[in-house]
Length: 555
Ligand code: SF4
Image (tube, rainbow, N blue to C red; front, side, top):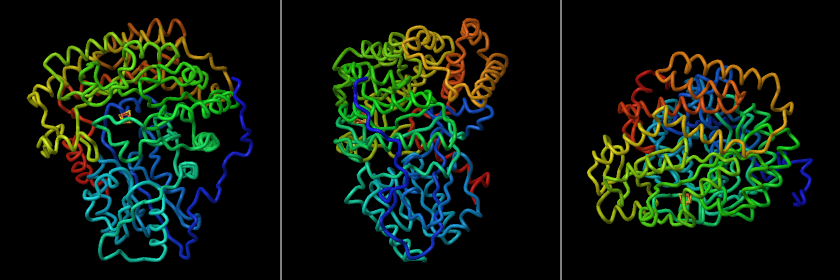
């Protein structure tokens, strides 16, 4: 590495820039709640019981509301509850002056339910985050809507909460006109949570994406010119994450990690240096467009920084389909070649796949399964097309009168193919892709052809601490017993596991055992109709909120 590193011996502490500049006159107690989200392929919930001592209960810490919690005046008392870890109790609502909630569209029923509970306790309620920013009309009963990102609206909202104790008579909206530059964002309030409750940790370097895929709301919500944090901030956040627990892996949740390649070239040497100084305590993962495969310099640095997984929105292997959804950047080189290039830098590819596109035919399922076989990608999130508000897709379908608002459907899109046929194709793809034999065969390929391309990380104290070894042994024991003895696919498991055990490939075996178990179980549930065909589907979400209320988990 020839890049000159600036010294960050005194990395970002709590600078005034990390907090609101507003100085409050009154004391306030703020309860920040992140609502329960629905299960999906990507939440890995079936893997949690195998992780033993870590008591993993949720996928990733919710970045947005943790940033807001960190930005609030330091004079105020803040309590943070992630309802995916444990629900807020009646005492929490009674303690608070104000309840702030944030979430995505799929959490809409839960967000509105929290509002009801807070109002029942007589508290002022605020909703912010991506869902309300895209669709304020989804939240008619909240006292205050915070629309857009952290910025001038946040300062106005803080001033309002400082000066008012009573609920407003009418809903108030604060809308960000001037965003706080990402480089002035505070470190998310990791001190308010235990990282060990999460499957992995996450971090955000940039926001926004230069592309314009038809179905995606990122460019309209967060802009097409990516905005960045500084390397100093990222290193300080990584330090703060490690202080809050031992995550093992950190996922860059940027909309597109390679949205601004020049900025990334500046960050990566610092990540490499941080890993070296700390003994490679974590693996990195990110989301990036497939054309990352055409940037060998970036890939080499990512390898050095120990990036082991990259999620690419491949969406479909069909050329015409990619053109029709404006995702032609996936065609800048043959897709299978691009996957192989990423593998050659030690990165296992995870792929998004969308079904129900206008270009789909009765052969689409066969083509997708063939693509899975040829690409050897173990994990693919296979979802039905769903139109999100504030996307070109939404506007087109609205014009064509093809938006359907029926709660018992898995998608709000009127497909060109018959609905049941699309669902059948989806179910076939999911169940065949995650047949244990087929899945393990793809993992085997990656163990042979991808993992050996990673750098050899040292047996540093950070990696071989007593706690880490205990954690690894517990996971291994759980996998061998729960999967190797009690699962319905134990024979297939041992065919995969025995040679790995003999060869001492324990880390790979734990990874495949954990992730594979989730995928196999989740796919089986999809096959039985227990999970929905779309991440955004309201069908199961609504039954889940009813279940939650019925069980009295709220207050
Ligand atoms: S590349 Fe990804 S983040 Fe960017 S517009 Fe397309 S789907 Fe959205």
